[in-house]
Amino acid sequence: MSRGRAALVLAAFVASLAWVALTPWCTRDRASADDFVAAARAAAIAEIPPGSLVLVHPPWRDDAVAAVRAAGVVADPAAVTSAFAPRHGEPWPPLVVLADADASPLPRALRARLEDERRVGSVAVARTAPGVPLGAGDAGTRDLSDGLAAAEVEVVRGAAVTRCSWSPVERRHRCPGMPEWVHVGVEELPVNGRAQRCTWAHPITDATLVVRFPAVPLQGALTLELALTDGAADNAALAPVRAALLVDGAPALELLQRPGRRGFTRGTAAAGARDAQVELRLTTPNDGQRHTCFRLTTGAGP
Image (cartoon, rainbow, N blue to C red; front, top):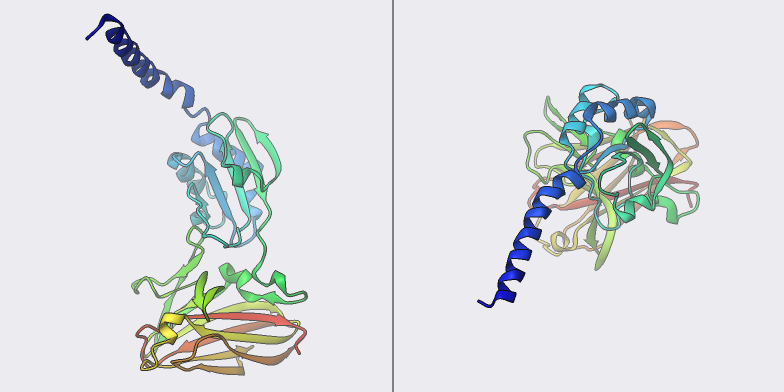
């Protein structure tokens, strides 16, 4: 090896050692876990609406996540997280961001949405506005799944009731002790030849999947749309899916999605202009490949 080449190798080795030594110093976290708790208290994040997330940054600050959860600053400790990865096309929930002001910068897509940013000690606190709601494309129409986080979801089988719980991180209700596909959440699914946003709610054999919206400001009518994903719909040998809609416990509408039929089956029921409990009950005689989703909106009606 020539003297010049040897010098280059030595220089590269020294540079790598310097990088290893200096990186922890340059990128170390300045804010302590207690700083994050203090910032959370100062920001009054206990008042954030249901379905919101408290996002801790940088993402490796598990100690800060644990501290804010343990401090009881947030009504739902599970809403505090360092991981946020919304699906493509999914509306963002309201976020409260707690970021170490001297650590790595926030992602550009997140920073572009920040509002009301301020600094509390060594922690930057900011909020984001929620994303575009599902029903925003139809003037005067409200999609009930915009309030899915506050809904009550349960699986009823005879006298046994399994209550499902909302996961703020996954943006869906998960049902304990049941397969992964037994969940309720807004997704983008293949319906009638294209990707469409609707609420996944897979029914279960010999049981009723219940999605209950406790207090809905009705606007005159309720419209229910029910579909199977295209792959499930194309199998005409499988079972139908039935959806029953109740308003304050009274039957309002019933739909049947038959196998072999693509697209949404749609029905509308008069509901008046009032606050009411709206409940959707989904059943099937056989849950094999019954990949079901629904849209439920309230508006002025036809």
